[in-house]
Image 1 (cartoon, rainbow, N blue to C red):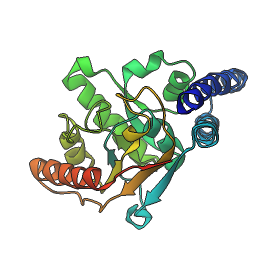
Image 2: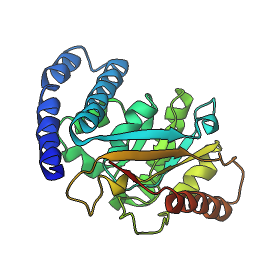
Image 3: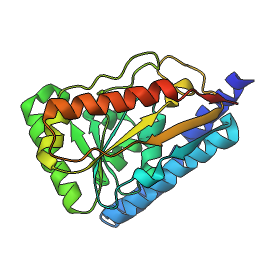
Image 4: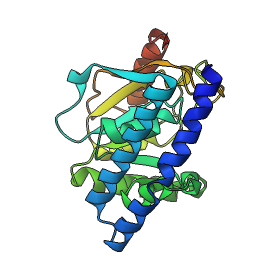
Length: 239
């Protein structure tokens, strides 16, 4: 039964995404205003989350909302699933996501990434990519938008311990902003090693903020420990 629900959701996702083709055309004719693009992307993401809840039986619960800073910040999150890439568009409506350029191959989603705008990085370009990430993150923060990065670089299995790639340490030092760690257990329900989407409740845990000014190695150590401890603590609630 869960296999059928998962496949029905895949069909729903394709149809729902296809319905946005006229919306994209209308926005393009209007000059692709950022506010309109972000509004459309939130609507698209909310529709996907509604489909997951109604078809698959998958929803989410937020914890630690009091930890969210009142000002734009740097958000770091562990990465287990496609789910959080979509969900963060609704959890933080104006967020600027640091994303790999390969995502530009995804229909509709790639258009939103370009026009929102998000921070698209070519990981093969080395130091040039890091400079672009820092400069565009500063610009987003200046506009009042928080910046989200997945420091692990790619989706990981739920069994893998959290380990950051190089880059986030420099971003932390250069931006001089409060960091909000967010721990997720989404991979238990829609993961890289789970072909079938499962019902249940994804845990979204906002952890204690990390103040700016720490040495880079100390920041990385503390952030990894916070996320790893919560990863091991957040057992899935299956339907």
